[in-house]
Length: 300
Length: 270
Image 1 (cartoon, chains in turn orange, brown):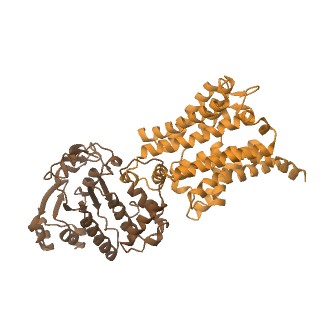
Image 2 (cartoon, one colour):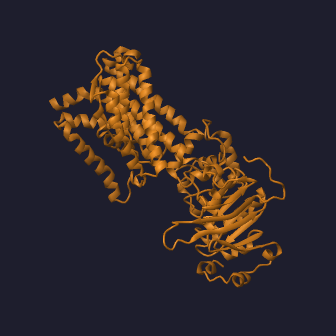
Image 3 (tube, chains in turn red, blue):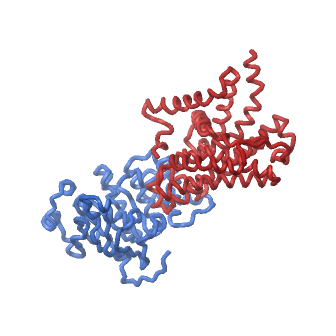
C-alpha cells in the first residue's frame, strides 16, 4: 500500500512535469511524423534551451526574454541540422548527431560549467504568478494552458498554405518540387520550429526545477519517442489534430509509468534500458507483423 | 512570371544542345542526352517515342528541372530556365508522372491535393489552405469529369484506385493553367481500359485549355493517334521529327519501317 501511496502523491508533480516535456515530444513528432525526417537534434537542443536560458537568467536578463532567446537558439540548432543534411547531402540521422555533439561543447561554453543552480535568479513562473511554483493545481493549469495554446497555433499553421506545403514534403518529397514547394525552405522551417519547441521545453524545465545541467539531454530522445509512440497508440494518427495531440497524451502517460516504475523500486539509472526496451518492443512488434509505425520514416 | 517578350511566332520552349551524362568519368558511361535540339510552338502536342535508354525521360526531367544538364540551354517563353530550381519552374511547367503514387499526396484528401495544385507557382503564405469557396470550386470541377470523385472531396487519396489517382494527377497538373504540360508515360502503369479513359481525359483537357504538351510514350498506337508532332529519340539524340500531314497519315507499319524499331516493348504496345 505504501508503494501505491507514494506513487499517488507524485501524480500531480509528474503530470506537471509531463506537460513541460510535451514541448520536447512535439519537437520530436514534427520531424519524425510531419517531415519524415528522423531528427536527433533534440538531444542537443533541449539542453541548449536550458543552458541559454539559465546563463541569461544568471546574467540578469528578464525571464521572458531569456526564454525567447533560448527558443531562438533551438530554432538555430534545428536549422543547422537541416542545412547540414541539405547542403552536404549527409544522412539525416548523422546530421542530427553532428549537431548535437557540437552542441555539447557549445552548451558547456554557454553555461561555463557542467551545472548551475539558479539560486536567487528570477524566473518566468515567478513573474506570471509566484504561486505557480508552490500550488500544484495552479501549476498544472498554467502548463496546460501553455501547451494547448501551442497546439492551437500549430494546428492553425498546418492548415495554412505554407503549413500544407510543409506536410507534402513529409508525405511525398518527389511530388513537392512539381507543386512549386521548396524542400529546402520547408525542411529548414520545419526543423527550426521543432527544435525551437524542444529548446522551449528545456528552458521551462530549467526554470521549474531551478537548475541547469549540460547533461540534461542525454537519453531525452528515447523518452520522447516512447511518449510519442504511446500517444499515437491512444489518439491514432489519422488526422493532423490527432497527430498533434499524440505527444501531449503520450508524455502524460509515459511519465506516469516512469513514476510508477520508480515507486516500485526501479533504480533511476536502470530507467534508460527499460525505456529503450519498451521502444524496441513497441516498434519491433508491429514490424514482425509486417508493419511498423516508424518504419516508413526511418528510411533516411 | 517571365515578361511576355516572346513574339507570336516564337517557339514556347527551346531546348538547344542539351547534354547529360550520368556517372560521368566511370567506365562505360554513355550520354543520356547527347546534344538534344527541340523546339515546341504554342499549342503543339509533341509525342516522344524511343527505345529504353534513348533519353526520353531524362529530357523530360531536365525540362522539369529535376535533372541539371551538363551543357546546352532551355528557354521557356523567352526566358532562360536552364539553371532554375524545379520548384521555381512549377508555375510554368507541370507534369504527370508514370507512377500514380508520385503524382498525388496519398495521406492528404482529394480537396487538399487540389488546393496544393491550385497554389502551384504562387507564394504560399498564411492564408487558409482550404475554404468553402475552394471546396465548391473543386466539387464543380470534379462533377464535370464524371469520375465519381465529386462526393468524396474529404477522402484521403490513398483510398483511390491507381486510375483515379492518375486522373487526379492530371487534373492537378492542369489546374493552374501551366504554359507547358509534361506527360511521362502517364498511362503506362494503368490497365488498358483505365489507360484509355485517362488518355481521353488528357486529350479533352489539353484541347479545352489549348495546352502546349510534351508526352513520352512507349505505346506506338498512342504515338500515332495523338498529337500533331512525333519525335523519335535514339541514343540521346532527336533522330526524327514528323509533323503536319505526314504525321496525320502515319500508320504503325510506316513507323516500324521508318525507324526499324526492334524494341520489344514498343512492338507490344501496338
